[in-house]
Image (cartoon, rainbow, N blue to C red; front, side):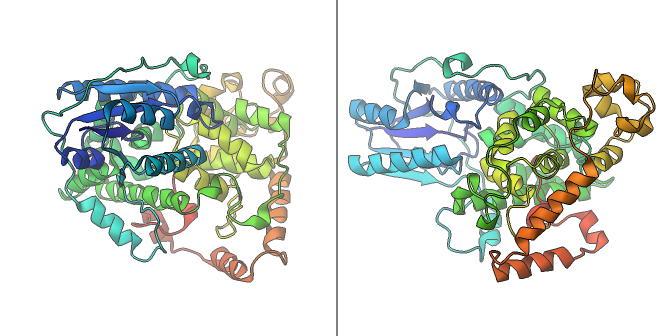
Amino acid sequence: MTSILWFKRDLRLDDHPALDRVISFDEPILCLYIVEPDLWQQPDASFRQYRFLEESLGDLRQSLQQRGAELVMRTGDAVAVLDELVGRHGCMRLVSHEETGNGWTYARDKRVAEWARGRGLPWIEVPQCGVVRRIVGRNGWQSARDDFMTQPPAHPPVRIKTMATASDPLPKAADLGLSPDGICLTQRGGRAAGVERLSSFLQHRGQHYRRAMSSPLEGAEACSRLSPHLAFGTLSVREAVQATRDHQSKGRKGGWSGALKSFQARLAWRDHFIQKLEDQPEIEHHCLHPAYEGLRPLEPDAARLKAWEGGETGLPFVDACMRSLRATGWLNFRMRAMVMSVASYHLWLDWRATGQHLARMFTDYEPGIHWSQVQMQSGTTGMNTIRIYNPVKQGLDQDPTGTFTRRWLPELAQVPDRFLQEPWKWEGAGKLLGRSYPEPIVDVQSAARAARDAVWAVRKSDGFHPVAKRIVQKHASRKAPRRRAARGPSRPRHADQMSFDF
């Protein structure tokens, strides 16, 4: 008899607990990946993500072939594909990793579970990170997550017994309705690329991680750049945690101790926030605090949304970040927070529309991290400090020489440094604004003030729960010790400390 090993966002053989489980049954394995056209029609899916998937599947196929196995590719609805394979080959069980994905994959897994029950077929879902399915409260969660990370990683066997069956060709992106979206400097997918990124980060790139991670220029090199590999599962979080601990145990100096500690904290935050989506899948579509529904128009201002997406707002640092993101599929964590904050507060756009655009732009889109962060930076959680990033100040702080801004906004090449982030104050602005570069579509100060007043009005309203009010007031009045804040927390603390990328 045969077991089906269903690969989803776990495109590797190393430290693959689901593979380890199915190997234990000592029977042929049908190694399956299903390309689901409906998944790639969702508003958070994109060409750049599919290209990363193609490269990752190529690596996975090669790894299986080296062990005498084949990756069976099928295109279609998951339930239909699984039903056909089980009917044809008499498979005894389905094995996969637990997945915390978007709302579409959540609904698909519910359909698969219903189908499996109807077939009398066991579906064994195995955890692959610190996220716990059907958790009751968070007491003890961190300890359980840490215990999981200390367990020995599962090593793939030298040979894998598989069943050969018909395989579909991998569809081209165009066949799925995906068209090139401006990307030209994307990260390479696949296990080999992920291993190289982890090794180079721990060996030399990450030495100044803590200091450089806030800069969109320096962060491109100093950040680990592992986020797409963790999102697609070409690397496991446990591999990253344990490799980092190995380097921490060596007592390295020169800034390494703080850098590696910060990196470990962000790996822990990753599981912490994916757990939030696992517990509350509705946060992808609904405000975490219902009092904020209707705060902003559900139908966003089309002109403002288009300007923000295209890097044409007239706010130089925001535009540089958005153009860089479109070209590379990546942005460092502080700038991700800033562009979302500007969209939600200064431009007063609903987080669902802007969040979907960013999801498509991020090669490393991870729903659990993404939707929590999108809501935090939009002030709709009801518990986190309202943080309205000033894009002018961020540009001055994070790009003091203007190198990053000018790289992506060549039309501002002649603007002096002191006016680069506020070209409307430059005496030569009349020859520039409204011609080669747009005038700002909002006044930064007045837009921020109006947004702050509107959000706080909700928090002070009768519809806001009294307990939530006290939590908000406590967060608003809290001042973290400077040294502690600078060093960074070792474990998840407050949601507004969370980062997108690693």
